[in-house]
Image 1 (cartoon, rainbow, N blue to C red):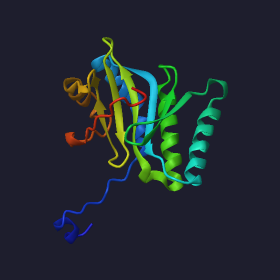
Image 2: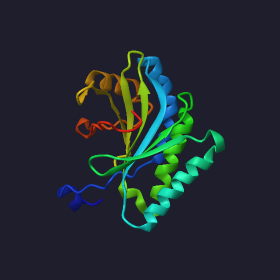
Image 3: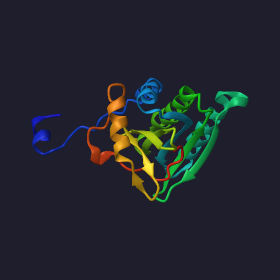
Image 4: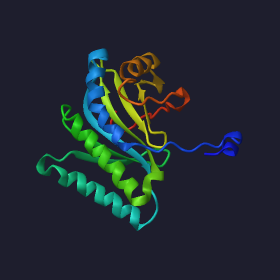
Length: 192
């Protein structure tokens, strides 16, 4: 990045570090100790489906990889499309298998990125639940290479206090998105 780029406000995009997802299990231990939120065993990946056979083949390959990954104990996989046209691939495992959820989410992201579909990736999330029924997702923004907490309430409202509490609890373990305006709500996201 040169002097002219700085003057004109052009910046280099942050390269995603998908291996950062593997820090989630240790962050989950810290999160549980600080807030009593525990993993639900669900995670999901959101992407904009591309047209054409190449993308359909990769999507089928990813599903096959996940289903063959553990044989009879393979995770449940659901695919849905939201109102914005993004495809969500939801992975469901037993709640005590957060490492498996993270590994599967990483595999989906890596497969899409390795086959040239990285620009279609939006985000990944892993679900948590509190003792009073609070819902939380730790969201990974692919294009920013950062995480943020999202705590929905009923009626498309957010529990901002819980989100800030979670940020404080895990910011030493995960690279938290510093720009709060980029903590986008993912209303109705599978895996919550």
